[in-house]
Length: 420
Image 1 (tube, one colour):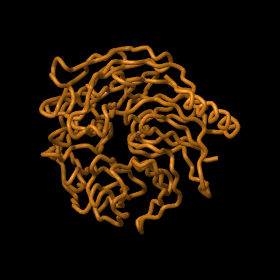
Image 2: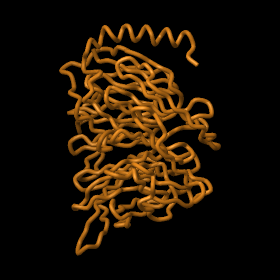
Image 3: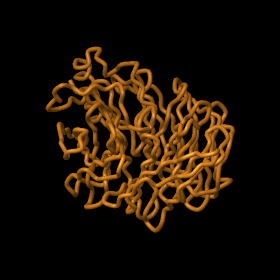
Image 4: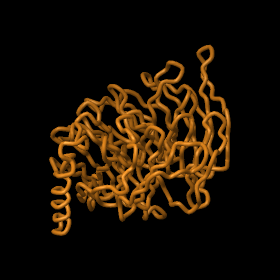
């Protein structure tokens, strides 16, 4: 239920926003942001041009209560889709992008409770949904995969692997974000001890293939092409693996298992044929899958231990990797992708998590304290060019950049901010 102060805030913000937007590109129908880290799952925003001079402040156009959770907002056809939790339900909402007005809302009972040690992260959902060809795919904290009609919100199908895996999620809940590649939606299901990478038909939910029996991790899969072979790169509980997209056959692997409290969480990054993989307290690897005479292998090109990725996924800009190490209570860093050399590190005690996007000559970093930093994509030193406070509560969900604004999901609400 919307409380009067919130309703007043929404109404006032919409009035202000309508005068500011004035038909601007904030509501451009040609902007699509389909899921976690964008169209290629690499954080690159190709529709955003950095301004010659960054504004001193941003304008809040609207803000609505949507619920808790980490899921990325989705944008398509002047609509915003948000997957979140309200009470005992996981909720998928569709909003008008220009106004924040609700178009439809669907609820699904998901009685998940975070286990000991994960309470501060909430009960999810921690997975980001994905939209493709008029369908939205969500993964609940309990590991259920659902397909929804983007226009109407109708449930199209749901698959629950709890009959195969008695607990169909790792300890702190399913957090991997499904990916859609052509006619199939792909995700890793299961628990810490056993699971499988599965491909389902986007129209029917029928299983196309199931690969392996490795437990699920918190990392998300990539759909990429390496040496001319379309494949799914998946970091599960035991190893980083490459799986043939069409057949589900395992091609190669690099063992890097979870152990004790060191979880497999960040999503790998592909650049110039190399996979950059970092894990909690385990540094960062530069790995290169190779194929010779029809056989695959993986070469470790470099390894460095000075910085490590905990929960935050890094992004590429040029030939540089920008990320957030959990050492020294949180540090931004820049790394040379060719050699693995750490080129600079920011100050310590920055926070617990950062969500990154990459734009021409800059990197956008949303800290978990609600501060949005724009930094130069340079190898010289940390150079901040703009900073904005965009939330008063924790911001763990990835931001979405529009042509002249951005969407920010904080602990319980979603807001549209304008650069004008």
